Image (cartoon, rainbow, N blue to C red; front, side, top):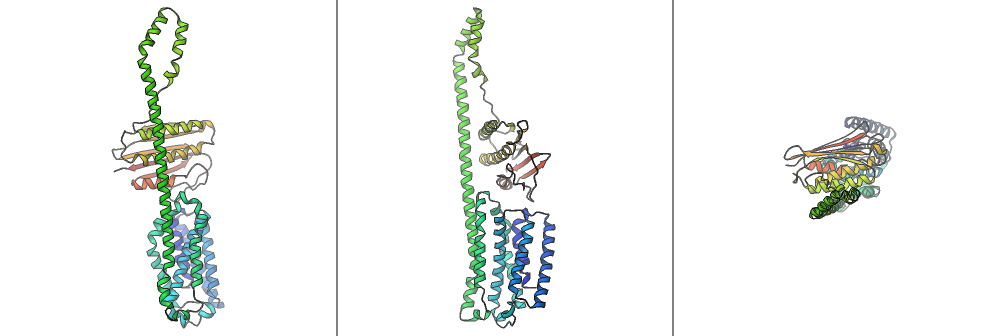
Length: 433
């Protein structure tokens, strides 16, 4: 039972990074998994004891059983499932191997090792103790860093082969497991093994940090690209404003001459010619500069997405009560607004024309608190994960929301996402002090 119970901490290692991706409530998942795994361990230990079965095939069966329980209790892609699963099993296998190395003196006189590969009670306890130490050492990684890595959208395509990293480490640990513990007591092999074996999980950890570094670089590159796009939007908006001012300036300059012509034509009763003369000013009169708010960056974003929405016959209703200077970085605010608008416009794109409408409201709630609300209609059904983000894989929602949520958390804000009566809404409050 002690040896088979290694799958219990393995299960803990698996579920810690995926608390937000469980199919059911936390206590339901933990209860079902805990009961099933405990019953399996007890039954497998009893069957193995009665029939004197080798423990390795039973351990393999335990791992397969754990995978089945895990597979149906989380809702993530297969690549991510395999990555988390093999990472957990690799850590458990390391604890078993290292306990054999540490307790080689006990295992050397273990009569059951040759026939069943069964550990002594002392080695089993050490293995579980090592699992607890590994859990403590890796707790921050498993609960904070790894979940952030799993949610990183910029490396989505890499998960289909990233699981090979812990899988290869698992194969290496299996290959290093000695056939007979007595071999560990020959020369300096045991001492070398005690020093070298911990390098395996450490190397895997370094590879994970390399992945985090790559993800951070991708995020930085994406941020710079977004800022470059915003600068282009502001430049285009500035060009529109300058052209409008040039046209109105020329019109004011020639206004006296136009008045003179109008007076002469009206005085002479040439009303037909007067109408023709005035008709040439209709295009100029129709041109007007519609500012959305006093902040230049947000105004440029609003102008860009209004033009984009018009290209797909979508209406955006704006209500932006924002000052010239925002209490947070303009780039971060515009990234939030841009992500929300892209999701909304993508969601309404295939709806009937009369339903293609997006509502945007944003204003200062105080000097340091800013609110953002975006809502739009959608079709179909939508489910949510434990972190309140959409679980649906339908095109139009979820893309960029993880990035928005991370920014909201940095500002100690709140983000509420709802989907009721075919209306999708995102309400955000940012504390900018």
